[in-house]
Image 1 (tube, rainbow, N blue to C red):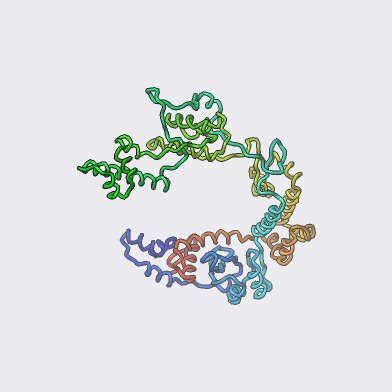
Image 2 (cartoon, rainbow, N blue to C red):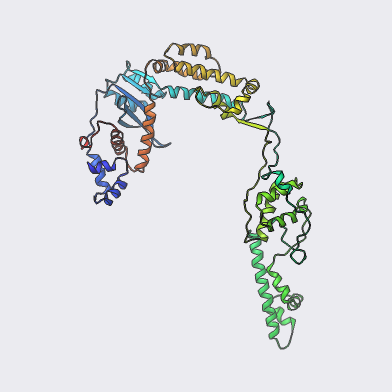
Length: 485
């Protein structure tokens, strides 16, 4: 009993490990054997059940879970979810008088075939879900993904995006940077890397390796030249496989010229719109200012070019000139819609009009503009009315209202939904007449999924059922471990 109690909400392997920590040496196989010996007595006299399908391997394998409607315990886990699966079980439980189920036609067919007098109760939640899916499809046809509202008017197309500034204008006005050349403490112009290039790219790394090889080759040539007694360019040219003109050039290079080979070659920079701001960027980066401040100031000074180019220049100039002082607050900017534009998504609007609980707080932005939206898109009012009417019918105590709802909306955009209700009319009306719901079935299914994952999917269906049977029973007041063994 102790071993079984420890393992109820654990996989057998985990239970074995935990038990070993407290001095109980038992293998996972032994725990499985304990479960195999549990006595599960089927009750052929059960009268009220809840039925739903569950995934033992999502998208591939499914099973049918059957619960006791009164105790909410799992009483059967059947392989498959077709009509035949439930038929076979019902043939051995002919005293079932009431079944709470979702809208699955396979289960409805099985119950009608085996137990024609059995009362079937459709779940209210699933009925509302079925209608909701239909209304979503209608919404997608007539309502755009996003509704843009500016000055109380609904725009026919998205407004033009604007560049966002991170920093308030008052802060930017206090900064004093211009595009004059940066100078050092001696008043000498600072020559810095003002190119938009990444020194860590494959191209630049290959160039760096090439410069290192070239520098070493020049050093070797000069050393060899100094060793020659009879100075002859032809000898060096043959030994190093280069032309005499190049030999002469390398031999005459000064130490300063050779050391400059460590630097990348600076080619003439073509004129760009950012040339008027390059020195500003460098000086602000040198002063260790945050990225967003540099970006905002350049924009403030009048730059209207490509924002991605500006992002790249700020980042790479900072990185290439101050490698030990990376840019702070790095954040690449995207254009945004003007701040006076209200954006309401289709899903937000649908949620708003389908919220019937008066205690639920609604989106104030939609409340302010709902009348304009309804005027622009009449389908919003129609969808809201359909859902409100059906919700009132389902939550009422008058089953006949279902017939009135079908008469009103049959032949409209939700005709398919009305026809599905007509085919399942008795269970739908029973959902109103009986104070019964299969909501507990959905809750139990969530618990089933948790237990399925706990056992890591290693158990076969029969073992999974035993694990779930014990776990579902363990929460009941009349549960005792000894009764199972």
